[in-house]
Image 1: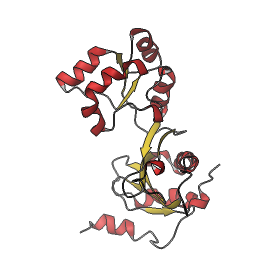
Image 2: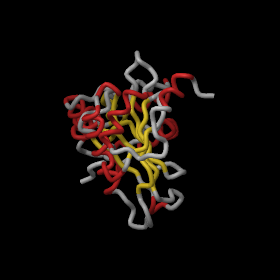
Image 3: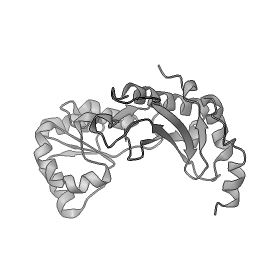
Amino acid sequence: MAGKKYRAAAAKIDRNRRYPLSEAVALLPEVTISAKSDETVDVAVRLGVNPKHADQMVRGAVVLPHGTGKSKRVLCLARPDKAKEALAAGADYAGGEEYVNKIKDENWFEFDAVVATPDMMGQVGKIGRVLGPRGLMPNPKVGTVTMDVAKAVGELKAGRVEFRVEKAGIVHSVIGKKSFGPEKLAANLSSFMDILIKMKPSTAKGNYVKSITISSTYGPGIKVDPATCDIK
């Protein structure tokens, strides 16, 4: 059963209404539950796709203009010359087989994202079973397998988020923190939706974006009108 604070917050939201984006982000601080913590703000987008079909799998990444509010610890798996480039770009750790062995033998996971050069993927494959379930496996489709490690590291540090449609056709992503305020949250959501729209599979029929809902960590969801997201 929902707590008293949650019920009070939910009562402020018209469940049958799709709010314009500007109103939704302005309402968000009023329906957050925790006054002490800077709650994370998430978006859930229900798409008109069937992820069971490979040609309708939606997966990508976007650099949010105002970041996520959290600094990612980035590991770059590369040969010495590229490892130096990664460190210069802000990577927290960079190296080759020594880090692969550290993960494999010591169960070391003091990082939030992994970038790898193509020539290291043979080594990375050795730890794929432990990286994959944690969502840490580098992937060329989202730009984390690349020779341009400086760009990849820079984007991750700047607020790059990856997303992937789930079995139910829903895409989840962080779009910032409660403390960002309405304008920054709106800009981040618009950028996210812009990329998501551009990734519409050619085989997807009917309404592509079925619903958009934003919420804070502990708060109730607010439905957003897709037509107001200023998608370019």
